[in-house]
Image (cartoon, rainbow, N blue to C red; front, side, top):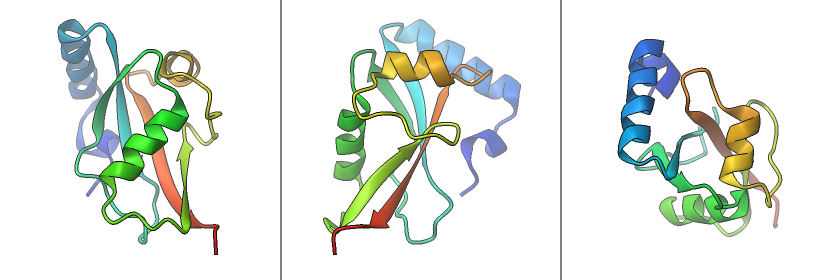
Length: 116
């Protein structure tokens, strides 16, 4: 499946962002996609509406629960515009630092064998 940015034109993405924020101004729209690794399973959805105060560690937990089956010998890493946000960063802090021109915050995730 193509990444969200490649499937939709900028105007479509911007319109989708505006519709979401009009309906739910209390939540931040994130696009969560897998990193370009074949062994990383895809999620069943890519759009997430996150509360302002959720941390990246909590987002990792949500993603782990949505990956089926999740191998406990692997670690989950989140990337935003090529950098790794700290686990204690809130969604609002990540949005302030990394929000895309279309309004969404794009996060990619990858699994790595680290525990054995």
